[in-house]
Length: 356
Image 1 (cartoon, one colour):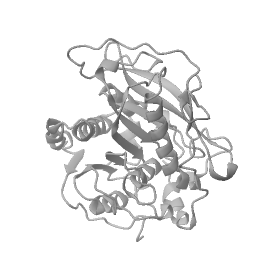
Image 2: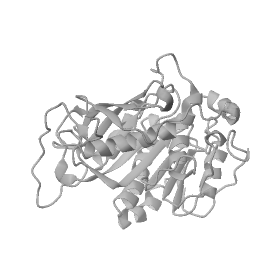
Image 3: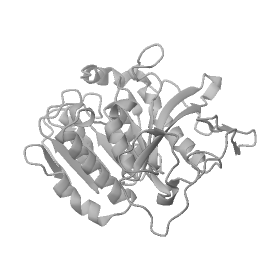
Image 4: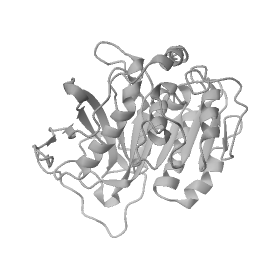
């Protein structure tokens, strides 16, 4: 449990943007065998072409086996500062029997594509790969899932963690999206031709939920390429600046445990009630800040099913998936789901959020 999160929300109010990341600079990406950018801005590769599977008459359907690749994105910084290095693992559908997950550098199942992209942002002081059960499930359902580890906020961060670096993470997230799409457009990479640039979702837990929300729905950090967002125990943050929900509406799923004392339910209720429709609120009875996302059991299984149904509904445009959300999110004694204009009552304020 990371109780510091409630405390740090209060002093984030005085945190400005630690430094501004260069959004318009040339993208440099290191992918597996060092994908780089030439001086003309045209991507160049130094590794051999990845073979692809032959297309089939009838596209394969999930669940799929899951392959993985380790990437490293190198983000330039304005003013000549040290670049921000963002390691990540990418998961994608691959050939083989369903359940054969985590095979490094396996051949992508290109006949299933092009595929939607999901960018997952982890909570503060939690390793991104701690969420492997969720990430594998989404990839097996037919999504390319990338989990960047942002500088200074993972347990493995050189020099220790610094939660104040969160103000830079929306720009990091946008850079990861750009880099992934560039890799998909570059011949000879594992991701070549695998991504559908018109179908992108962001998902985040805790601080990662704050970052995902800012990227999806705050004028400070908006990325118009994002078409849907899932916020797992997240919140609005004053320290990002900007205005929430003054941007065009996009589908949103908010998930919250009723026993969460790190991210109080008031935080999720506040952002949900302000968000325009279409939106869904999944409440998990008796669950704390981490249990529904990191611990095996019925709560995690419910989160898997509801989040995947939401993604299928809005990135794959499946009406039947949206129709099934009510039954998937209604588990006696455990879960309730709502798509009403408002839920509540909030029962308190959200530390660090606008109006707190």
